[in-house]
Image (cartoon, one colour):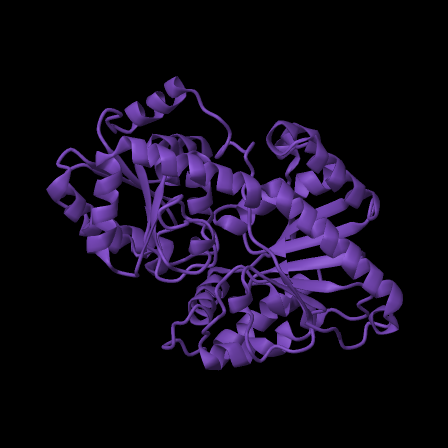
Length: 433
């Protein structure tokens, strides 16, 4: 395992007091006192790219700042492993055509076994994120503390054969965390279930306030005109994000708003081998279209640039066909930018139709374009929805709320260890939903 260094993202809970208020700070500190000194290990697949890494980058320093001993580890694996886990990810989100071979399963488990031998097991709670490191628990003996699997994806309608292959490892965990109740598989019985929403860090480089001059500098660098309407999207290049549908929608928008611009931003994550393929497909699909800017981290687009583009966008669009939660929507709303998005996964928790943006059906590009045009032509409406969106995020989806959630879970699980001898003896996990 490789430990992620988050020292450059140092945070103090008091830094957030102007945003969340002193009462909330005191309440969180009171919870933290009950588990001060507890050791927690988080394990995921990558330190860069995607919502899980974004959240851990802020959550781990915050947990440390309130007195917990927290480590963040990343699995080490070869490209074949990540090709397999991407297929697993797609299958769990509903791709019924995926069939894992015996060799893929064997290698998937072998990587888990090797990583388990390097994992620091002396902890009060271990949190494993998503399918990539899921089977590590199989190769851990003498467990004396609770293990939690945090699933960030939509498991409401998984590929039956792939889910059957992974379910035995899921059932080894003492507790499971899902984003929505609808994501909890119907055949899961035993582990304790938590429902927890993802969140963003309002003080991170991607979300902190920027001056108008800083925004303008970024737009100028990439040849985007700040005086013309901008339709923005920030997502991985992935079939579930429907990037080609975004381009189709933009074509329809251009028929009504001829000076509109499209900015599509994506990053290539270590654990997503399909990203390059879908980036190429997207670029090819946009060939010959005016005013389309397709940018990545390879073009020098980092958190600061994403921040600027989300603030400069007249409207942000997200046309996912399946979605766990979509923090890119949260980020845009926090910046006061209205969002037009599909009714997919956790997006409707954020985009309240007619209040913080507009919801459309999957692949209904005509309606999506009509809503985008409406907001481009009515700046006062875009501002009103954007202001509502920022307040909605402040109340529900900031990292301090995730901090509170993890502290409560820690308190709950530690108390369970004290009262459940079977966990102390590291026998099969038990619990109740």
